Picture 1 (cartoon, rainbow, N blue to C red):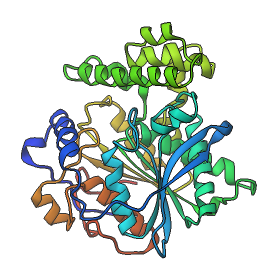
Picture 2 (picture 1 turned 45 degrees about the horizontal axis):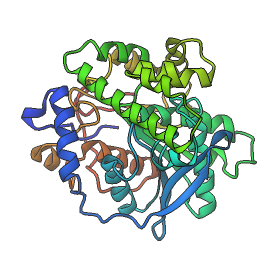
Picture 3 (picture 1 turned 120 degrees about the vertical axis):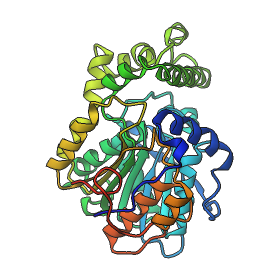
Picture 4 (picture 1 turned 90 degrees about the vertical axis):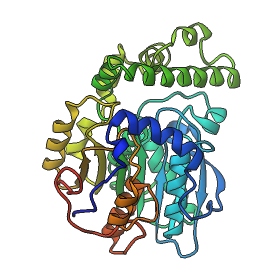
Length: 370
């Protein structure tokens, strides 16, 4: 498949500039979808190991399939405007929408002190959420999505979906009801990327900001669930690595952060994925090591279930489209990556979508690599 090339504004043809601008602009002007907020219903799901997960569910009349999604390394549903953009657009196209606060985040943190595992257990959470959503009336097929670290979680979910549903009727959902997944700028190799990030001029500021949010997350769980987290360990957790070293790996049983990152890496999953998967990835993403790109390409080439939409520009989950780019793609708004995901889903199901039309593109900017 080929899609309309990604055409960013001229002043955003730099990964760092795109990342910063999209984040700041999006907070103020994200509501450009021309669609109202779906009538969400609150739901407490039960994830893997019995962990309660807070989510929102909206089912339109005559829904044809369901999207299940979450966000990146920090955040909460009420503030994750990028995910809300998807919710509005998908609901308007007839998808049931299930969004959730993943482990240790948002209202899920109020329900349980369980910390993150970067996909090792969150993959099962996705599948069990889909099964519960089906019982609520959400129709199959179910499609898993996320961006940044949330993209890594969604990739783990695709692996877990096959393992948990194949020959197992206890979950209430079958393997055939799991459609696949689509992710934007997924984290694929935390060990290399975090090491790379902290060595870059702007990267160290990105890392410091994320680390502060993780520390706040830890203190919130400490206050909500007294006695579950050691305050001294929280005080020592001043970096992303430190957060995982002090708080995460002791509970998961890993001897080192390096071992944890290697075990949870999503790059290793790509050759094994058995469900249709779309990966949108920017070569100028400032969060991830550039050496990952050729390895990503090679892994996707070897697995016919994966479609890779690799772009020269886009930054880290930025992907704001220029006015010219919107005209070229026949997009109704600047959210190029979500429009491509919805278009890909429509092509998979044989329907025509709101997002751009199918057309050719060059290999770097619009061509779909398989």
